[in-house]
Image 1 (spheres, rainbow, N blue to C red):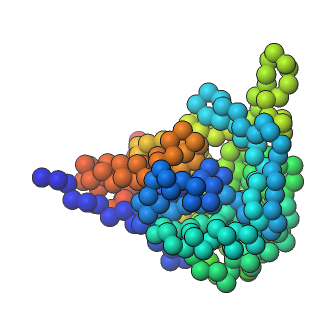
Image 2: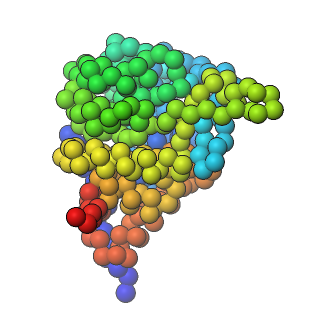
Length: 311
């Protein structure tokens, strides 16, 4: 006898319900359409497209990606087509896919974030906005905003005033107190928090004595950061249990997703693993449902914050 299928829907604030808790992370999945030869997008809870800025960005010069033990460093520099081309070329196709589309928004100043939010506001097919206030591989904008609670609150509040959509804020781990910056985002009007973005890292070619990345430093991601990410999700959930959290960091299998959910995440995003296995997100979504069914978990939401700590 097969175990009963569990309920996999999750709610992420402001009435947004996803069919399952598995999304793909911004910057690792293009605009989503590029991955269609490898998986059925409708099997995912949602996709988060690469960061969209007011105008097109070429990104950093090569080399922009370096493999590291159990992870990778990237310094792509938020290359994207800009919001006008995204609306004209990408969004009409994404509307036809049966999955939630979350647009990651990047800006070099608060006005940039508002400009993108306003450009997207009249468009159908956008389930939520995710503010990238935290990317460590550019020399302006996000890295400064993401480290300042006051700036996080101000930018979030400005965008909140420009959109009626669910608003997520993606947090940098490169701060002294993750709870402080999380609280600032919520105070500014965030409906949910995505955590975490990448850690600042560096790799050196010892033969040439030069940095392996043209940008010198980049963002470290992959399984190497998962324990750090899980700990930060736990810290924020403990401080603000009512706030929906989306866990990010080194997820490659269903058990990794479960770990984040037990720590307090309602949903997860898969990033670096997409480079090794383009179909991984769909497999994790299916395996997560099977894991719950095999253990009698009737609703995946039962896992959220269900960590047991002996006192």
